[in-house]
Amino acid sequence: MFAQVSTVTFEGIDAKQVDVQVLIAPGLPSFSIVGLPDKSVGESRERVRAALTAIGLGLPAKRITVNLAPADMPKEGTHYDLPIALGVMAAAGAIPGDLLKDFIVIGELGLDGSLGPITGALPAAFGASGLDKGLICPAGSGPEAAWASAEMPIVAPSHLTQLVNHLKGTSTLARPKPHLERSAGSSSDLRDVRGQESAKRALEVAAAGGHHMLMIGPPGAGKSMMAQRLPGILPPLEPHELLEVAMVQSIAGTIVNGTLTATRPFRAPHHSASMAALVGGGAKPKPGEVALAHHGVLFLDELPEFPPHVLDALRQPIESGETIIARVNHRIRYPSRFQLVAAMNPCRCGHAWTPGMTCKHGKRCEESYRGRISGPLWDRIDIQTPVAPVKATDLALPPAQEGSAEVAARVAAARSIQMKRYSIIGNESITTNANCPAALLDDFCALSREALAMLEKAADIARLSARGYHRTLRLARTVADLDASAGVHAIHIAEALSLRGEVAAARRAEAA
Image 1 (cartoon, rainbow, N blue to C red):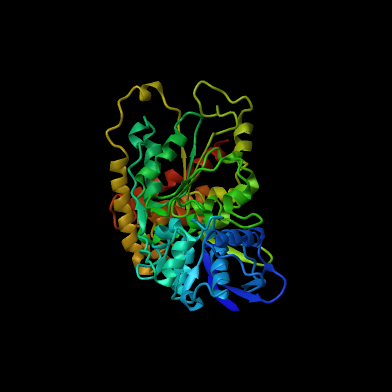
Image 2 (image 1 turned 90 degrees about the vertical axis):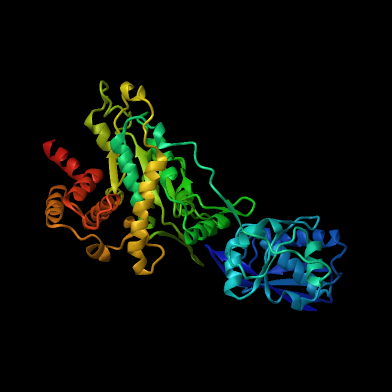
């Protein structure tokens, strides 16, 4: 007696088909699973045995062999429970095997036959849709899977008995509906930030163009406070962005109750995070913080306190917009197009820029602290803005009249201009100036004569690299978009150079 059920295995956010082949043959009673299963898959034997007993279907007293094909591909995860159980039931004649040929099956079994939610339901649903098949998944994962396609058949039972009755036609399960959580708005508002007008302007430019940003200032100046208010001025996720973000979150198991959200991710790992935690990896590679921040913000507070080799691992994802985790027997890709926002003190003691206070180690303390960040990473950060200490007179002022809502409106208008501009490219991943390819800058960042002369002079003074030159162009394009200007003029180049801070740093170095 033989039966076959289709399921999937995951490589990054991609789902690949796996055939669960079940053979029940005469011989001493046994239950074996082959095909490179890990421990969680091997333990499916006991969960399947208990679940079938709970619904009154004991295992036949024969030799049961389950093969997970292709057999040379590692299998891991508890979502193999349900396809194995259905395969055994079909091979034993308890259910018709032909009812399962048009479905991909995933699900974790409880000992009482209940079906619990699993990670990866959305990628599995997209994989099933690509194979022109339906999906059988637990009820807790049904709303998540329903986002893959409005036409694809989806069966989402909460118990094994419900699924058997549905397959036999004695009852019918309704197709789950997709759920979307609407943001209720954040209680954090830019209106709460007193003073810091130049830093708030830098935050607005960063949000408008998706630029990476570093805030440098003494403790208590409000760097973290402003970073936490960045999500409040960012536009909601576009539909295709929402699904890309949800695919990563599904693999990571961070989707709650199968409900997706249109709010952009905001990830803020502690500086003790390892390289695997930040960029992904481990014995069983999982997405790291950079992937979980896809289409959102990665906030790194106390930037120099991160290990230097961990920070340098960010360089490749920043450039390519994806993280590649390579192992001997497989290669995994996670999308990682995030916006880096970082904060740091000017020196280790934090007193270098505070009026009336002196750093006890002098200039050497500031230089050694900044030296923990490599030059190539500095070069990839578009905006490097100082954040001065807040004066008591600023704190005594009433809240600013302009808050997050007003800034968000300008950011949304600038982003709309950029989306229309880059729509002609036909690449959905390029929607902001920060992601504009260098080859297209001449077309999209046409400079006036005065602007070009200013940029060339600044490039000589600051010794800008090719990357720094192009990032200055992108930054100036964003400033122009906030002004609703079709061209890039000298005033836009001047503000972009001010936001990068390289010319001022070069002149300070010459003076020293």
